[in-house]
Length: 485
Image (cartoon, rainbow, N blue to C red; front, side, top):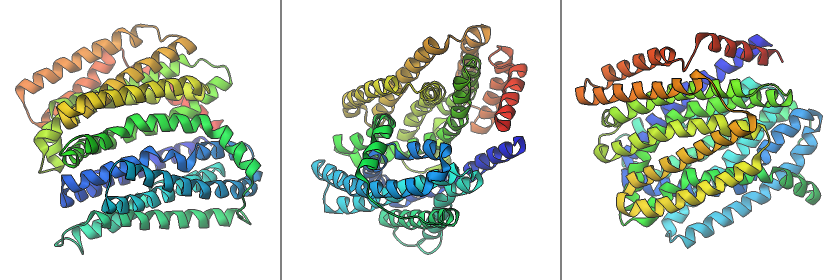
């Protein structure tokens, strides 16, 4: 079991590292360069709108389904029949709500047409996630891992051909990108359904009102949490596009910087996926949670601070690696968002811990406060500072949410005491800030400067006691034990 666990872990990480960064920084960024920041900005705003209301498509059903089938795999056929019926009704509701929202926000016929395609794509993506939850519940983790990147791999092929093949010398249209997504999602859903169909003899469809209501009741707390968090993660692009006279351009500039942040943030998302079962197992067995949470936070602190300092010092050089337009205005946005990266990854530790404990009520209250704060800050800062104002609104919100979750986790599970959890991280922060300030004055260039920061971070992490070799060995032993369980 230990070997299987490690193979699956390496498989997931390698797949994500190979496919998703190339899609984000190669394909997605390539599309923006071809269509221009203004056209892409409208697309990004519409995409954010479809994301904001995406929870209507799922209402937490996928999370409920994964937990339920992991405990009762023999009920997959019955569960599938009931849930698919619910999901089809939710698709109609989601489409209606999205189109009404687009109309109220003042979008014209052309934008609403594009929104319609994005609605279809979101419905297909949600169905793919649901089918994958069934496959994961059958413990076919390798298949689930392949399906997790299949749509992006297909998009790399389809859109890559349009960008650098057939359409290289033609005016690229954003509609090509959106419809390529439709094809990729459709193919992925088809393959997932075929795989599931081979594992389950009969898959039927029915509407059971009582069953539907029961599922929605159980999944609602998760749905509410996802909805509230999505609002303060995705509202900024939509508000930029709607609030400013040159909103489409500003949304496109923000998207340039956010794309790099999204590529970095993938590592934090993988971390949360690893921590959730570990925290859940410790809580269930009444084991000590504080050591693992403290160590996870310090690992995050070491890695994300180094990335943030590199982002601050060399923001212009990093943006210029991929873009030739709007680099001067998108670089400061990227620098601020890289500070967000530290806060967001901190929430991946403490928010995951609170989720594992089942404390969804507290998380929902925090997320609601974060949503209200983020909207208020955006309304205040965007008119004056445009895309940079949206980035600062995000940073303030994420820092406060991370701090609140850390305090709540410490109160519930015990504080993280000791030199390595107090003096160490503060000393590490000071060393990196001084290093970054010196490099900013010296200006050695991205590659040499980045290497200096990484080397300094590695030495400082152990010299300050933020990380300890013995502790890392204990973590590996715990992970191996998780694989045996």
